[in-house]
Figure 1 (cartoon, one colour):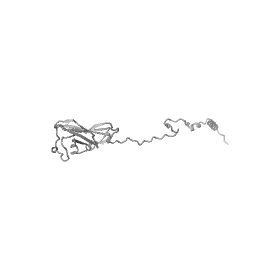
Figure 2 (figure 1 turned 60 degrees about the vertical axis):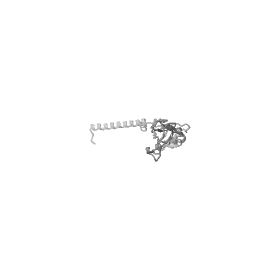
Figure 3 (figure 1 turned 180 degrees about the vertical axis):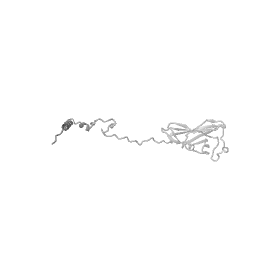
Figure 4 (figure 1 turned 135 degrees about the vertical axis):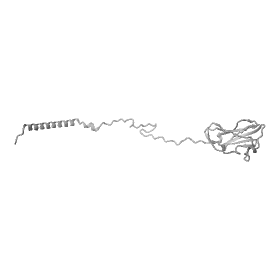
Length: 220
């Protein structure tokens, strides 16, 4: 067998030495891993804590007399609502005829209005339109004039009359000091009321309610 050169022997010894070093290093690492077990905590991760954040913890309000731990039922909306305003009743309403004067000189026409009072404890509705208004001027038992005899374009208007309040009609009705009838709507064909201190009484009704008293006026 031919002999190898010295260089070959040196390379072989170097290879053996390096292999021995690697074997020793692997053994050392294996022993350290068995003792230290560095993965034991890292794999499991941080242990969960028993406390929860305020956002995660539901808040429960205790109800007197409720069973601990039981859920409090949501309040049930009541079926009650604001009662509707009802129509005025006769016992609550006071109607009064109002005039712009007590005495009228010759040629001056009386202007008639309505005072309406709700003596009740609650608001109520009433039709205050011209359809429901009737002024009547009488001398004793003799009816001289009615506002509805020749009325044009009557209308309805529902209004709310507050409890304990009094209101007066805004636009007065004018009596032209003549005797009215549905047959004589033209003023020139009507009999004129006498003057000289003649006494007349004015009554009114509105919304189905009639004034209990009359208002006296004197014509001159």
